[in-house]
Image (cartoon, rainbow, N blue to C red):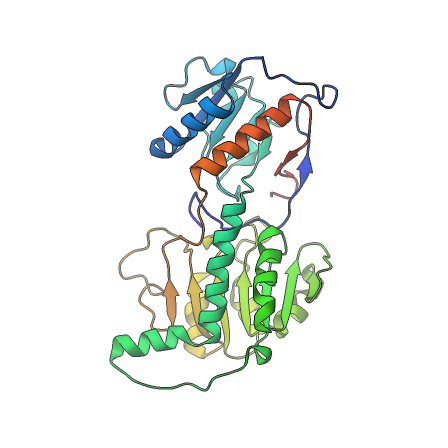
Length: 339
């Protein structure tokens, strides 16, 4: 997932984060200064939405931001260096992406509330991609693509979905939505998350102590985890060795989850049969990148999902109105957990 994507978040934490007037108290008539620091083409769409939905807002595009001390809300993928100095009265930072691993939380003043993007279109796109990925791995598509490129015509034994166990790492909004999408196909479903979850029709596991038991029953492993200090590099040799021989891998979260050399070694040994990757450590990768050219790996250029500017801008307008009325905002991150 790039700035639009997914990547990928495991929980949806709802907090107020900010001033607390009496619930329902409206601040509609008060002027609002909103900064925007991201793609200017998309920013033009954001500007039009704000003009229509939140006309009392002064919407300012970086770097023509004006008096930084008046800006209370900032919409950005990467905020400017020295955020506290540039925007000393900032109250809320809206991350354009669903994940916030691109942010240096230590550089963001503690009084600033950070909100990640929760967008139905973003979820829908990720579910489409991940469902495609699971089905492609199940039906041996990486092998058939490789055979086609080599000019081979060959068959592989068809396996019933009921015989292919799918494990989902990350059971937040995205993971649960993917599970619902896969249920009609009849895959036995397993899920793993940092904290215990109960999900109908799925065997769930939680925490480091249950990670091995989870992996042992995954024929297809899907990573939709948020990228944190605890999950960075989690797709590694130790993880692959706990999977059944010949397991398949789908990573649609972040490139930082995967130790690429370990995957290359696992593919060579047969521990991992094939993989679909939407993210890599470095993007774009070098033309001779081993995974980009591997015959049993399909790589897509971080396109699993995208935030649509119209819908995202409308969502943020609504969140700003809630914040100014002292109401909870959906998507506020927990700094201690990193998502």
